[in-house]
Length: 389
Image (cartoon, rainbow, N blue to C red; front, side):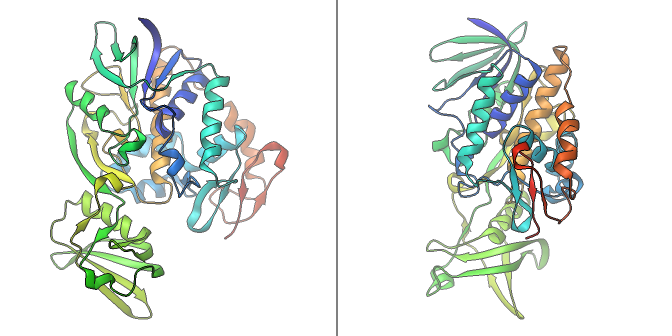
């Protein structure tokens, strides 16, 4: 049995950022990942291009997340906004680029490069990671927590759970973090598929499979009223209807717990199509999970549990989800950093803002992050490229 300052359970986007952040603070940290390699779902993000965030202000992002997620995330997004995330990547040697729809990607548009950056930073900052280390039990002790895996036991005063939701379980997101939370006294909101397509009657897609409609608007209707609206792409698949406008609509359906609803698709030129879905696709195929550890039991200013002191949460293990377009990765990164910052404070560490000051002038030379101008800085400095697209 060994002891450490912080145990992070989960090696996905939130867990990796948490580990690197702990390394920045000099915390003695161990990251535990149940799969043989970390970041498996991260490698899938944005069709393996890794849509890191959306290039908008934190206030606008809070608005886009909506109730109750946006207000809960406001402190985390204020502490680590989309523009700060881009500066952070640039400061650590990975340039980012803004594409259509304000979507931010690594300049290589390769998710593997993002994962490599994280694993390199963990190594360089002396943060230990154990893979193939599925946690069997998480117990509260007199002095903190005891975490038991198949092969070893480790104790720590603080634990951060970053195990994700339950979508794409082959990547390691199997709902174990929510189960540990439940055993430690937390409420877990029911799981629902978020950002998934809809299954429909065969006549809806007959003769149109493969058809793509760009820039549509979708009204989500319930009891004759518009309860939500989305914009984006509408795609006809062999199993039903999808595309960003439809997947975002599925999140509204899940969040409002709608049972009887219709989708009115504005195709442009005065053409409308009304669809009554049979159901959303399986949660295993959803991009995110709606549901998880109840937000009312977590301090949004620190991400610490109000039920179990010393226990923190980050990312999709919480009842946190957002639209398509980098919102969910931004939430994972921001909550991870806020949680670790609080652990660092309690361990007597001070969060440094040196990298912000050092890189902000170079990053913004020629324009602002929220602006639409092109600002290509010295490539040798690893600065962000901002493009009007």
